[in-house]
Length: 145
Ligand SMILES: [Zn+2]
Image (cartoon, rainbow, N blue to C red):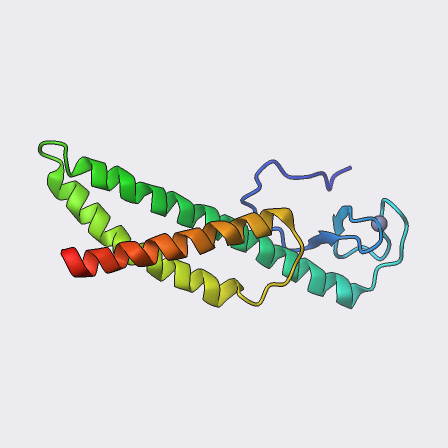
């Protein structure tokens, strides 16, 4: 089948969605599910594909945010490395501002998503944790700089 799953999950997956009947991932432009032969309403399919693409975007943004949050600790560690103190300060200051900013941006973009998807729920939990910790870190940064 030409329409097999792509190995690059970072692709924008607009155009695919879950069959409402059998939950298999299918092409939104098809009129019939290729797994269970259920008829596909093209309007509903397009809306579902758009939603799925947004969910994928939310998951990849969350994982990017997690990488940024983890990087704070790397930069904080660099502060104690001779000759790299400046880099550690610069990086941790920048991320102290950037992480809360990106967290807020995530909530603005994706707060309206209502979906029972394991990956999305995990992404959301990650962003909740990062929002709280990032907020506290920003507070620490403002108070103790
Ligand atoms: Zn189906």
